[in-house]
Length: 74
Image (cartoon, rainbow, N blue to C red; front, side, top):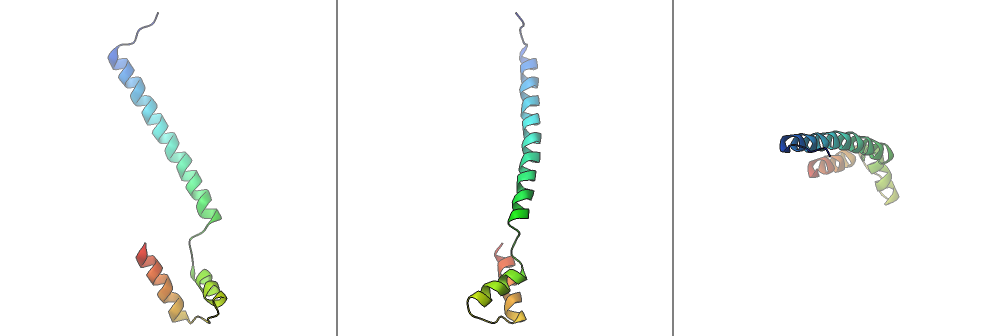
């Protein structure tokens, strides 16, 4: 029967934690990139379309004001 010293066990546990953290980082980064590709952040064209659907003809000043307020809210 094989026995492990306490320091060997600690090293194995730390290696497993490190490998898991690295793998999780790359998996989450890939998922996040896919989500951004499917649902891009809002832009000026989206704001214009939204205002037009609400029955308003937006001026450039209004569009820029909405974009600024959204960026400041982040």
